[in-house]
Length: 478
Ligand SMILES: [Fe+2]
Ligand SMILES: [Fe+2]
Image 1 (cartoon, protein in one colour):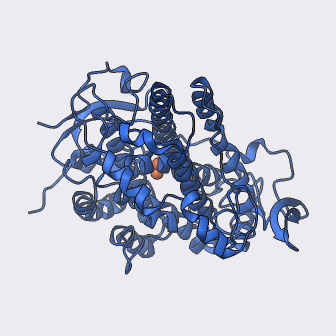
Image 2 (tube, rainbow, N blue to C red; image 1 turned 180 degrees about the vertical axis):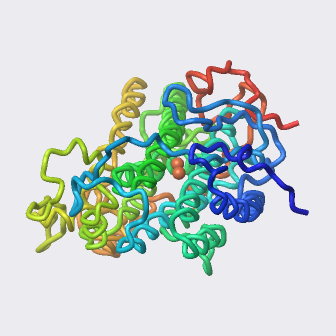
Image 3 (tube, rainbow, N blue to C red; image 1 turned 60 degrees about the horizontal axis):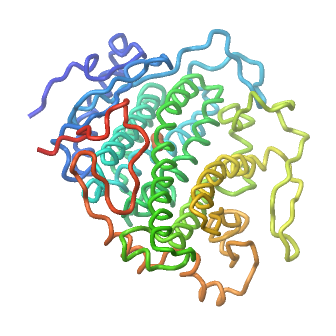
């Protein structure tokens, strides 16, 4: 049975959908497949539950979201673009200074479509990766945050589908179908990027993923927000507002894990970060925490692609994808004659090497990411030092455990020492979570669903979502 829905009402939008019958029809056709996908690949076991979710209902930074109880399949996945800036011009590349495009320039069609598809593919992929996590949620608060992230990734898929359906004709429609067909981790039809085919089997992984991997999303979106193709720029600018919450979930989640671990260590008089006895008390040991950082950081760095890339140069030249905070950079924004220093492994050592700035754009975006991803470490290490634990969490060397780019396949320690492969393999389980570690993490995560209660391994948050009190029932399970 096909349920007729009023799409203007169902899809909050500021793109004039009711005046655009062709796109409206295309979205109506796509919608049932999306709902099928959501029901089969979205949060398993919670489809009928009432969840306290925010819905994007406008684009005014002061009040763009509304909180309400809703079942997830009935979430209003809207299509919202940041407001049009009158007189906006292209900020970089060959077309610098020309008015931005409202339609896809024919010569860049394939390149632009690819950018939308790659971005779009990551959105449903993460929902698929996280679909079983509700069953081990450490609290209703955390469960709600997971579902919030999930529905918003769903909305981000809608955002890219809208661009594909509106601007790319039949090719766009086919890509929209393909986006519902690929599956994270599936051997025959995997998602496009490596990190999006990894499992997110437990909550520590989820917090690491939202901290490290969603942050790659932020960097990519910020670069696309610079685009000379105005609809892409406006779409991604709005997506960034939601993305901020995803990274908050990751950062605050990891902080709360550390708070619980360190207070338990103090209580037990344990100083050694590698002392696993804390596990018997249901908290995550710091050694495992560091190994998880090493893993998620290194697979996320791979998402930036090769440090030196002609693809990146081409999409910059074409005015399709800029640099992070392009408008704040003081140079000619064309980069034809400039260079950029990239870390490489040359003649048996790591050294900075001046490369053509255009070719080095991926390397540069990765540098910007590393600065951004480093920020929470100060806060985390303060949690440790406050508890008088003599240990600092850190990011591993960027050549550690890489499969893409300049350092792919090298055997490098987290400290950045190149060693024989056999030594690396012999030490792997000291640097990356072993199967045993992963199994133990999983075994310690039992679902806690009493309002205001939290699992043994995580401290409560400082404040509630939407200023709700501690015992608020974020998800109604009965
Ligand atoms: Fe997203
Ligand atoms: Fe996200």
